[in-house]
Image 1 (cartoon, rainbow, N blue to C red):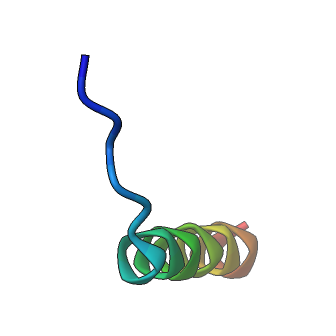
Image 2: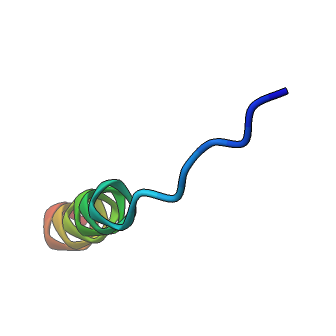
Image 3: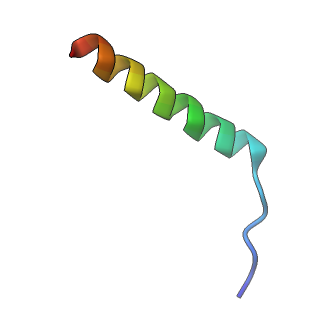
Amino acid sequence: MEKMPFQPELTRTTTMVSATTTTTKTTVT
């Protein structure tokens, strides 16, 4: 089984998307 290489950019993008989603939810609510 291959180990998936750590991708800082992907992680950072995912974090930003999550933060944006949370902010949007908070604003809508």
